[in-house]
Amino acid sequence: MKRREFIKISTLTGIAINLPFSIFAENDKLPLNELKPNEKGEFVLPKLPYDYKALEPHFDAQTMEIHHSKHHAAYVKGLNNLVIKYESIANLSLEKIFSQLSNYPKELVIGIKNQGGGHWNHDFFWKILTPKSNFPSTNLLKKLEKQFGTLETFKEQFQAASLSVFGSGWCWLVYDKKEFKIVTTPNQENPLMNSQKPILGLDVWEHAYYLKYQNKRVDYIKSFWNVLNWDEVEKNLNN
Ligand code: MN3
Image 1 (cartoon, helix red, strand yellow):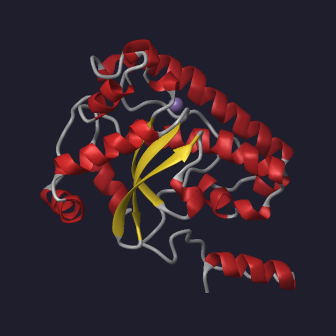
Image 2 (tube, helix red, strand yellow):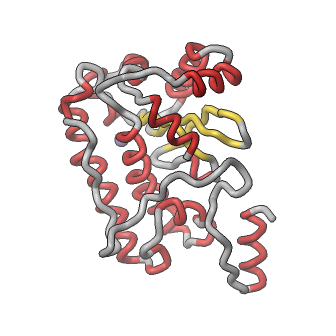
């Protein structure tokens, strides 16, 4: 039974059935590591695994500091305000919350998309960046080449998709139904909200690049490849 059908049927019958949680049940392997609140039920701003200046000259220190300590922190605060207000999402992982968005009232859905997405997306983004840029493993490279022809072609397509985001949003590489897809989402929405598994993502909000690159989003996108940790991308694929 498809997940949406299950939700629909269980809503109609009013019978709650506990199934093992997997938002990728129809797709691929297991869910990613879940992003959960702490023992007090609060989401916490994660520490970066590197200094703010570590990604220079590609991502500048001032942008990184503001992006993490102001923008990301604000999403965490906004999300915690929602958790206080809505008991239905208390103590749940964000992945679980995203998987049952259709069950929530409209105001909560909007809040989760903005604040919950904001927290999840940035947590994901920081983890795939590194001061020591590397290359895809032979295994991952083969998979990418099978789908896109060459790594360069993948990068070109990803770059074009990133440039196509009008206003604020994200560009992602997802693994869906046993193939890679490049998708974009508006604002702080993400592929998990569409039951797709993201393995790589790029923040294309102006706050991610404007101080250094101003209107030249393309230069920011090109610089991304210099700080991308392909090992983490592969971990996400296999997770
Ligand atoms: Mn951002």
